[in-house]
Length: 249
Image (cartoon, rainbow, N blue to C red; front, side, top):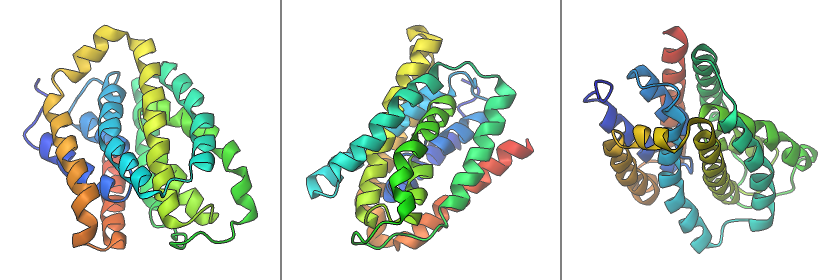
């Protein structure tokens, strides 16, 4: 376990805390951190998708209890993307292609976090909002291919088109990430086999524990300490830094 360096577990904790506080799972940054640590790229998506599921499950349940999930609209987007995430997980990919796609995805996702937010309460959507069911299919495939949930791309598009109010968009992104992470994980297992699943997760147990704690703290406490805008900017900076490191290395 030479890849499990002393900085990796606290980095996963901090990533989960930041991402959970704005409704995301952090899978893209988990992948980048594992790549920088020298983890086998073929097993990266298994670890990051499991971490995603751990982080966003709690957030999705809290959104559901608060009644902020627009179930019909959110499920349409999630269930269109899910089969594509499964296919993405099944798709073989070369290491160089994987790392370039991941790096570019991280930089694009970080920049997208600076997009304007929708109003807190639902307002009239833009005409482009009706095309979201078509947009989520390629997002789902990319999510499964590189081992992310895809919500970090979906949410800015929903905000830009005023698809719903800000709270409803956060709830939708959380559900979208959960369903796509599970679908992508099934695809990854179909490609790599159950033995590789155990091989990936057994040494990564400290990382899973770190994201459980960080995710819970992020969703419960972080927004009380810092404004949502500040947390979003910190998350964007972390995402762009991780993507840039991957592309430069």
